[in-house]
View 1 (cartoon, rainbow, N blue to C red):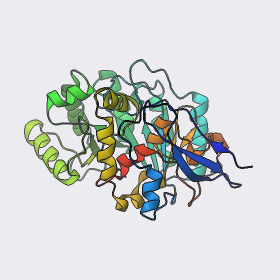
View 2 (cartoon, rainbow, N blue to C red; view 1 turned 120 degrees about the vertical axis):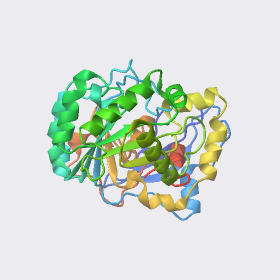
View 3 (cartoon, rainbow, N blue to C red; view 1 turned 180 degrees about the vertical axis):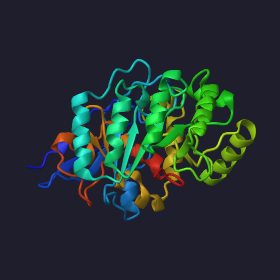
View 4 (cartoon, helix red, strand yellow; view 1 turned 60 degrees about the vertical axis):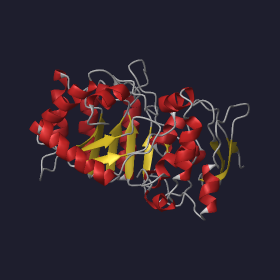
Length: 354
């Protein structure tokens, strides 16, 4: 029996959700997007699914090669751009039982990449055990960090474990300007981040020719799109090397996604409507084929599955239907639909978010 799926927004005014019907194979078909009633939309944009249809496009899965694991929302920072609203006061954290279920799914799925994220995954009390247990289950393991937790002395063992298992580190480093970086992420963040990057370089990360990959991620400080990734990478590499002797491999620049804390800031500052219009008007149909939601499945600290980390933040389950990692015999099938909403414009604006 087909049943409509719906969900109450927890992201504030203007949020649309994709309504999905289940078919006999348990795969979702996008039907339409609607606004929750009696909410201020701000400046409305065309629903994302209608934009896709207008370009003759569908957003469906290819082969799922990446398992992204969100260990929880605890973080030592409360960044303004955070789509998850992670912070020091969050208590959501993956249990041992759920981790074992996730590890079982990783074995069954034979994923090429395992992507460990949070919050700040460094703050999970069993993070060393988790990294050591997950790394052998995939060809490549990514560890996402904010750099400031690793600045603490007691995190040296975690760096050594990542080093031993050849885990790639993806670090948030939004700006080369200390004032701008700390306005976005908090006081003292810039100097701690530089200190950690130097420690990672000393451990072999980011060095030319090293297989210990160190990549940086930069997000804009406000309601605007990121600069050219290629140009920004050259500038970051030049300035970090010349000013502080720091090396890294690649820089990725992404648009901020209008969810969570960033969405609230947009609304409170009167920028929500203009930002959504900017994202929608910058829609690039060429980004669809390479979107991460086509090849990634995200699992949260409870073991629930999502098409991506942004749908996790919005509460849009995998293909529009709530499923637990313990129920999945294998990765989602190619051709299954991806649940969408208007926040998806952030991943398809300009060069996209892949």
